Image (cartoon, rainbow, N blue to C red; front, side, top):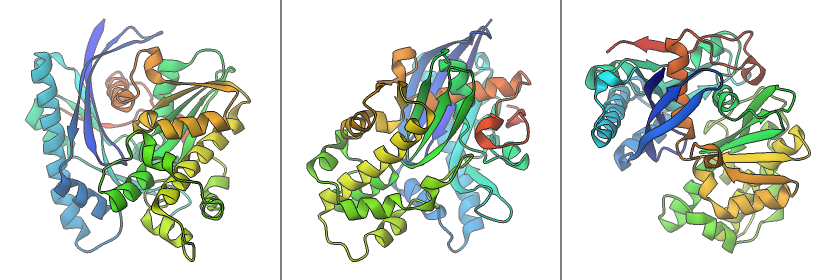
Length: 369
């Protein structure tokens, strides 16, 4: 039976809302088809409000409460625009899966009582779209002792498991790896920074939201001492399960490491790109000696970063997830459509071998239209 779902994703890069209409058919194997997708930019004022909430500050509850509603409205607008493009009525869509916008992620080991907070009120989304909405995917896993992240490995296994060693790496604001072993085991974790600091640095020095194709990073040289200081962060040596975010890898972290050093902005960008590549490659090397590496997220379009990865992983073939039918730009949003489907079907969707939760469980709350 064919089923239509919509997936919504706004990631750590805080640049846009991805909305994807997905058709699922069958169960094992599950056939997945992207019917249509849109990328709705986040306004500069909303982006500023989101980033301000990613660190402690005054009037947090008031600011978070208002932004929760505003993001819910923005997510609903993205859904409406998507349906208008496709001429699909809300009644034909079984549910929306909305990850929400993460503003604070405090996993086990970082704080006495771990929590994760995503904004984008699902009540607002369901009411404005007329479509049942499934949201709040992380917290059940955390109640069971898990990191609440990364969540995508369960979907990566459903979509890309092949009987051979294959890794899926999402390079968003942060980067994470899914290890799909030839033995059927699924493992994964956040590897560290992805695009967040690269985007911050190019915007600070060149007024651009991102370094197109990684051209600016490619024009600089890696600064050995800054590279060593950044890679000395304890997170990289921490054994999984583990997850991270802007709470760890932020402008203050970079500026602290740069203390006393004198290097050009382009060399700093090159060094940041090398740190992202090195931390990802280290995770891939720890998984297997060779195999297939599938890339998704905004970093898949960063040619400089992909070249750095290939130099560090000469025995691995590297490709976009689009090679297997789901373009890397849309993969996470498709994943949250799948999470919504799992929830409505009463099926678990966390992966305890990834997050460290005590057991598998159904994730997400259901908000009827």
